[in-house]
Structures are given as structure tokens and as C-alpha cells.
Image 1 (spheres, rainbow, N blue to C red):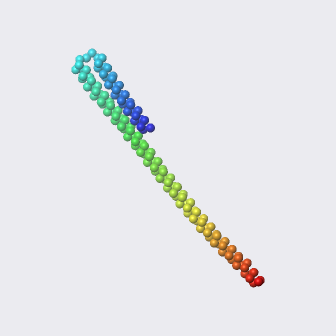
Image 2 (tube, one colour):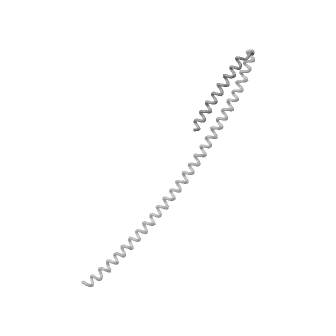
Image 3 (cartoon, rainbow, N blue to C red):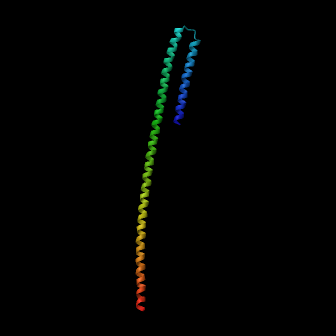
Length: 133
């Protein structure tokens, strides 16, 4: 989008300068004046057009700088947002990992308890059978 605005401004500037030169040349050539008066008018018009062109160039440059600064600010805001989101996702990942570890530890403990209970139950069942035999 910025390129398009720059292209439009450049095209406008070229059209402005060409139009000014054609208009000035037509006015000078059609006016009934001496050669010296015509040359003086050409110099005056050239100075005016140069000033107008410099003003237009300055305006376009300022607009381009403003657009660049706005784009830079937006890029910085997007980068900050992406960093914040990455940190949030990282924190969520750590939380999920810790929760998974906790659940695994609980499952291991429950399995140990169940194994111990099964072992104790098996010993109790084996003990009465041994006395009966």
C-alpha cells in the first residue's frame, strides 16, 4: 500500500511539473513580448516551479517518513504481542508438564499401594492354606 502511494505521488509530481512547464511555455510563446522579457519570465517561472517541486518533494518525503514510522510502530506492537503470546504458551506448557508429572507420581504411588495390598492379601491367603495342609 505504501508503494502505491509513493507511485501516485511520483506520478502526480511528474504530471505537475510537465503541466507547469507546458503551461509556462505556452504563455510565454503566445505573449507579445520581447526576447529579453520572455527569458526573464522563463527564469522566474523556472524558479517558481523549482520551489513548488521542492515543496512537493518535501511533502512526499515527510509522508513517506510518517508511513514508515507508523509501519515500524505496528511491527513493534505485533512483535511485542507475539512475545507475550509465546510466553503465555510456554507458561501453559510448563503448567501442563507439572500437572502430568504430579498425576504420574500419584499413579505410581497408587500402583505401589495396590501391589503391596495384593501381596499382603496373597500372603494372608497362602498362610491359612499352609496351616491346613
